[in-house]
Image 1 (cartoon, rainbow, N blue to C red):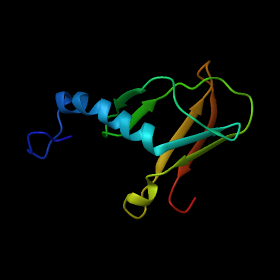
Image 2 (image 1 turned 90 degrees about the vertical axis):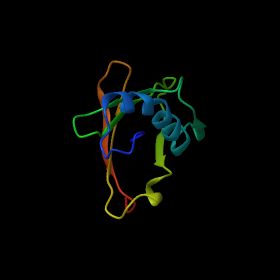
Image 3 (image 1 turned 60 degrees about the horizontal axis):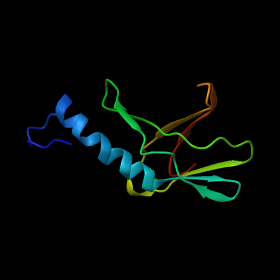
Length: 104
């Protein structure tokens, strides 16, 4: 994200990185619905928190059956890395919140 190599990421660089971050997550986040891999509707909305944590919102077609999620990139990240995930329903109500690690 640091396009000018000044060891800081400014708002312009964050905004420019959003489509790339969404593209990576679409490839590396796997949701299985009804025993079929589901793809999100659209690329997703990316925002960055005050500590540069990425907050990514994807929309999927509604389902009422078993949901499985797998982050395929966790084994590529440093030891001890944790990923916080929240899944919400269409009304914005939390369905599940989970901390994912390579061990979980």
